[in-house]
Length: 404
Image (cartoon, rainbow, N blue to C red; front, side, top):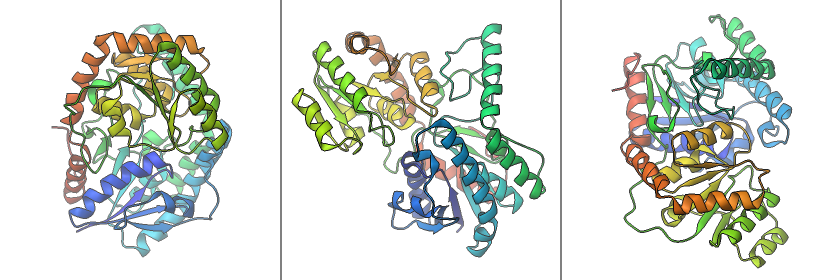
């Protein structure tokens, strides 16, 4: 059996997906160890998975406000991991590495040590294709020359903004004796790449032969519910954005205007005074909820367009009103609209606009029909169990695992 290292961003959604994958590998007899800053230890809940702290115990900048704080933090963590992981992997006898696509250090170090590694897309895939916009861009899909120029110019701007991390990648690739590179998408596995998406949700695009869209990485696979939907809306802005009281208040007002009950899960982002004010206005509000269970009953979901929530909505055939806020959420929202499973609104839209979108979702059965078709594709995608099989095959053979 193999000893796997897991390198992922210390964010709840990324750790949760990797943990589900780790549990499947542990059940198959493997050993799995997560390597990250000490602060990430609390995000790991699987008792049979191991955790090794590396680097200095400093707060991770993805939790801090501001785009440039985020860029600086990502570059610093990549630099730290490239310095710390080679020795840590040797000390702990690592056989193979499972790498978050968004953390290039894992792939760089694995290649430097000649270890097999597998890339996992916990968010939208970072694989480049000049016929579609980058995941962080809000643009719709188009095939005209105007769209191609828009995608290319926006990619140039993004690469310029991310140049600090790019310089870190280039420097460590050079020091490791690897071919030149400067972007995370140039650090992906040639053996297998695993995605939480499904083909029907993405834009038309070209992907490597070893790319496997297996759907959400959950330990328990989703099942199709036979129950009927109930007349209420569920709203969540995820674990990082749950503090946005003003947006929750606007969502609550929109639901009152539409005449539908609302359940908000704020992931402990709001204080007692804020939750009390929302409750007095007629909103049911909780810190955390069993999202899949709630979505099986909900008639619609209002979300920040986090990929996990959108995949849960597809798994439960729940039409989506996407209000993107950060990261790859604009790209997820664009795909919600493209696939016909929901609508998109700007976070600055007035409550009346949100209300009109909600009524459209609730009254137009085409959204339910389209998302039900995607639900079937997701249920059959294989999930974490299929991902574990792909990983084992890649590590055992050290050959590219083609999509069947």
